[in-house]
Length: 129
Image 1 (cartoon, rainbow, N blue to C red):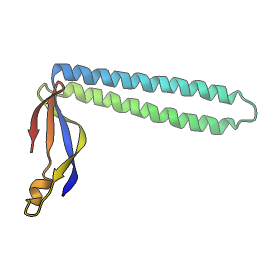
Image 2 (image 1 turned 120 degrees about the vertical axis):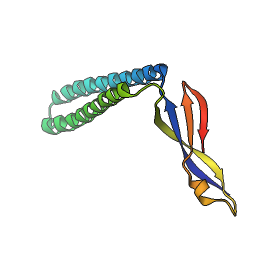
Image 3 (image 1 turned 180 degrees about the horizontal axis):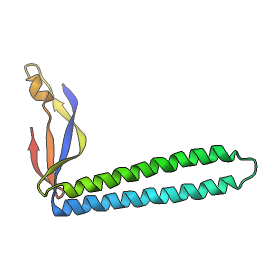
Image 4 (image 1 turned 30 degrees about the vertical axis):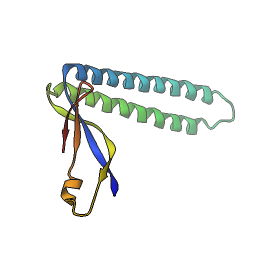
């Protein structure tokens, strides 16, 4: 029988990977800031239409803008944490699902043990079992 198991993806931090992560953070922040500007534009556009409840529109748009600003603050925090990481540190980047064979007599603790795929600069360097 096969079961689906989650496998962690870890990344070993290098100068190159730090720069890639930093670049991704900058792209995310820029996208969120553009979304905020677009929402402000749409809010002003709708508020100028007659017969539209201005306060409700302002509240809904402001909630969306605030949510994006919180995401930007979180990215800023992640950037600060990235600067504290030493080269050679391992971080969890995500997870994937894998099929694992389970048979009668298998050691259940071994089946459940956390596994990880360790990547350095987009190259798998180790598989931890």
